[in-house]
Image 1 (cartoon, rainbow, N blue to C red):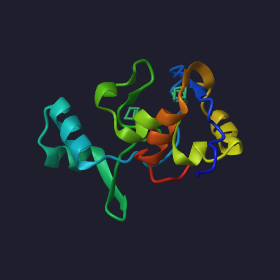
Image 2 (spheres, rainbow, N blue to C red):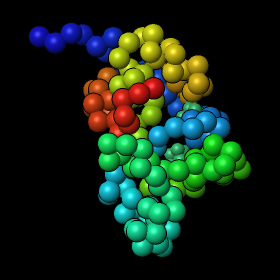
Image 3 (cartoon, rainbow, N blue to C red):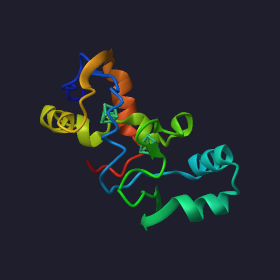
Length: 142
Ligand code: SF4
Ligand code: SF4
């Protein structure tokens, strides 16, 4: 029998659109080939052009979105938020239920210091959180 999940009763989260996870710091926003294809299509660009102008290789074959000079995600606009929301990468979709946030109550508390939506809003069931954390699209770092 497996260990009981510390979040077995679920966790609350609702994005408050503060933008802090998309702006002002350098980081990896991992994009898969399928996600690149969708984003390129959305922007009306050939995939090769999209890769050249919107992504960078961060090592180990991992491709990340690039940032603006001010360290905001290339697709973040201060007035509008994420401008590719419907096609945002899985890494963005699964936040804050990343392995790095849900492996312990302490990790969750630490994550909530940078994301005011954690512990707000709707209760998300444990099975959904577990599923997202096991395939969170991130590099496992927080
Ligand atoms: S930090 Fe949290 S509340 Fe703010 S935009 Fe990101 S997910 Fe939403
Ligand atoms: S793709 Fe959208 S949700 Fe993801 S980091 Fe960039 S602005 Fe934020």
